[in-house]
Structure formats: C-alpha cells, structure tokens
Image 1 (tube, rainbow, N blue to C red):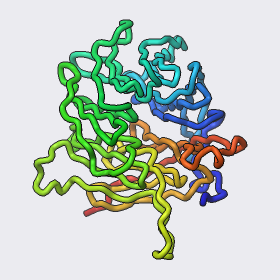
Image 2 (tube, rainbow, N blue to C red):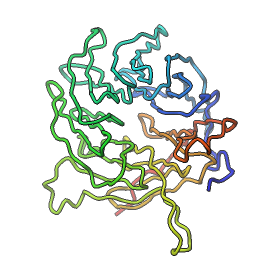
Image 3 (tube, helix red, strand yellow):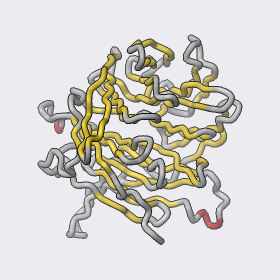
Image 4 (cartoon, rainbow, N blue to C red):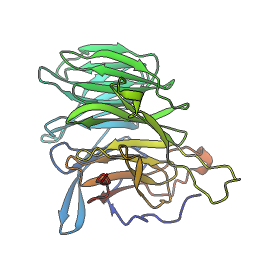
Length: 347
C-alpha cells in the first residue's frame, strides 16, 4: 500500500497546483517555464527559478477549457502552448498576448498534441479517441492532413524526422515526417496489456528508437532499425512492481503511467501507479535510482530542456477505481534537481 509521506524525496513542491488529477506536464524547449494540464479543465504555467541550491516556482497564468485538459505541448520557440481536451478542441495559448484561441478540433476527446518543427514546414499533430491523427497549420480551419488509425490514440512523441503514436489495441504507429507526414510502419511491441506512454530516444543526435510502457508493470525498448545483429538493443524490463521478501506471495503489479528519455544522457525515467519514479540506463540495462514512495499515484513526468530538472505529478490515476478516490487528497507537482542521477554508469 502507499506510504504516508507526501514528499519523501524532498523535492521542490510547485505552488498553487491544479485542483484535480494532473494529466500532462511539459517544460518549455527554450526556458524554465512549466505547463500542466488537469482534469479541473485548466492549463497552468509557472516560471521555475533557481536561487543557490533552492528552487522557486512562480505561477504566471492559467487558461480554461470547457472540459478536462488531457495534453499540452510547446511550440519550438517557446512562445505558444497547445492544449487538447475532453471538449474535443485544441487551443493555442499565446503567452506573450495571453490570447487563448481554438486552432483544431476532433470528433472525440483529444488525447495528444505535439508540435512538429521541420525544415520545410511546421505544424501541430493532434491525436484523438476518434481514431485519427490530424496535422494542422494553426492559421487554417481545416487540417492539412488526416491519418486514420486502427484505434484510439493514447500517447505520442515527436523527434523530427520521426513521430510515434500509441493506440488502443497495443499498436504503435511510426511516422516519417520528411516532406510531409507518412505512415512508415504499424507494429505491436512485446507487451501484452494496454500501452500507456511512449518516448523517442536518440543515438548520435538522431532518433534511434522508442521506449513504451504498459499497465502490467513493464516497459519495452524498441530500436527503429531491427536489422542489428540479434536485435540486441530490443528488450522488455519489469518496473513498478512490489518486491516483497516472501516469494510465495503474489507480486503487486502497477501501471507504468509515464516514460521519458533524458535530453542529454539518453537514460530514462518511468513513473507509476505505485507512487514511485525510477531512473534507468537502457544500454547497461540497470536501474540508476529508485525514488521513495509517495502517498499517491504518479500520473506523468517530464525533463526540462537542459536535463537538470525532472518534474512529476502526484495525483490519483483511478487505477484502483472510485472507491479509492479521496477528494481531500492534494494534487501535487514536484521538481527534482537530478544532478548526476541520470548519468550513465561507466562501462
């Protein structure tokens, strides 16, 4: 069961957090600004400042959808935030003017928003439970392009020239973004249960594969190039499971709600329904650090652009149903100064 510790890792707690479960966290690609989307219909922005060894979070602004916000992302220049939600709309938040305008729509809730910055074009990719991925020039009312998917879109990541999307039915769609978005491949990773999140990793500065995680306390590492000898870079690993001393007792297995790769080191973080975060070195196949257990599930996470901050959200993910929901329990966002905790182990 959960610990009673609200902040056992002694990380910075962001002030004025959302009032309901936190669905999405995203750091600006250019500066230390953080946005969070929440089931209280709001998207909020904070500026993160460091004074000595201490962090400070300063609330800057917030905007509101007419339904829960499920995802948020930034434009490449860090001047705009895009949000998608249960009201089936996608909004653009211009942080300079504080304008909040609708730029896209779907026929069902919008689960993913990702900005694509290509040499010859730029656009917003949105994924929905209406089983489509759409690509938008935000100045036009109609999408530039629509890709029909086999099932609902659950999670996406973009590292030009590649995009990946997780679908219901345990499928992953891999897109080539050169010239215009095209489907390169649809595959099924070796995970047997619902997929929750996906993140692209790089090798020598180029997208080289992805990590994907599922509700069965397991994650998979999948290289894009499957021709490597014996596929030695392709494997699954268990995470976010209770490791009791009594091996005769069944193991508690928790959903892995988020997976993110460190922007510099290529190591990764996972967060789960067990209320813990973990840091991993995929190349050495080792765990670098296990966080202390919080008093609530962890729903999502992100690294800032320089990789010195790791942010994670402590809020209920409904994995144990409504009877375990405690409306009195606080929703929190914590920022950890990771220092060298994600540095790969020396070979």
